[in-house]
Length: 218
Image 1: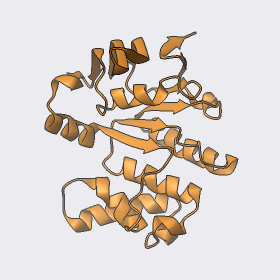
Image 2: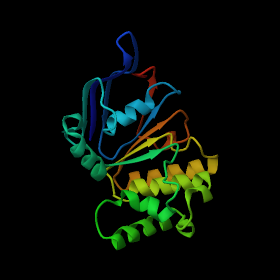
Image 3: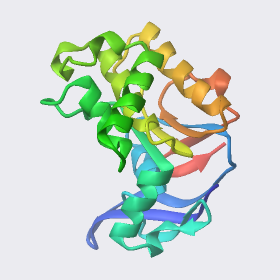
């Protein structure tokens, strides 16, 4: 499903380099829920973006769904992400001038507007935000915003969810709700890569990897 072989990422100039990832080998099986845990600055987000086809490594191979994704051109990679990967971020990244329903529909891809709206409404109902679909992000709580972001990630039924500190801005109750939603997705056969500095999702993980200074450590 996801295979990283000897992946490194270097930022900066030749005279002042920062090695964000160092020779990462990581294999994730289809249907796994894995956690990548590490402190701020350990390379977690860099690793997640590399898996998601959004940040090309300096060296190494990233293979997702039997495709070396950095051999694809930008258009092909964007299309691949749209069909296979859903992203959830700590900062939500909702469009402020769109309402909840419109934000969810953004990721629905092609198809009739009626079909996209129906799918978005169904997800809003499943995630407990159906009474907020006409509200703008500024009118929502942090927990509600993250549920909108989750609905947006799930609407195109991706094979993989990449979650970057999805509970980082939430209180304990909302954190548990986000983890519950991701676990339900996992139980339907989805693959979850959950990046965090905490331990709130440990009980649901099939495997846990610790990241320190760009390296996976025991």
